[in-house]
Length: 297
Image (cartoon, rainbow, N blue to C red):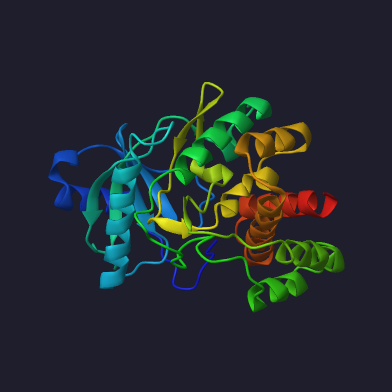
């Protein structure tokens, strides 16, 4: 089911033909679509070592190509600087027959995405994820400041989008209680000092586990700089009870950052709830679960 205006579908045969034409050294490798709850790209496994990422909404505009190039540059920068594996860029693809947009090929990160993994010890995961996010936040920004890119790339602020999303979700959640959660977060002291290097989207689908440990970070976006509290979203999207408390302690953040993190988690979940209600059951369920945890806290 299509989630976005302008969304298109391509099949494995089309992707295989594009790879044969544009990446000859990978020609002949089997190409198969992967089941995914992702909302940005359609992923295709290429052989055993590669992954093709085809944006659901194609664009042949120069800025779309530039964005993919910045994502590739960010992945190269992150590789070796984080305690987990990140995919490496292999090829930036041009539009092909049946697909009028830029796309890309990356190395494969072995493991299972957290949203599909079973039996992961949440206490161990809390430590692993905190270690990863602290490593991200410690990366040099080279003086780059708030850039409005990605979640957290701007100060937490009241928006019509959040307010209207609460109203549109009133049949699913307690709207007055949701409004109270949002206003509580807005009342927290804002981030002071320079913007930090942030990931912006450390959600279960982007976290790879292997042998019970956090082993990879995928879906690398272009660099984003903002409030590190934006990366606290997993506190509610992933953890419960003691594991959430352990994650908070391991992150070493203050009470104001925790409240802003609550706001970032709320903003992300409330927008996804109504948008994906009828198109993406995995994202819808994750958003609803996150909101229930936020409203109960």
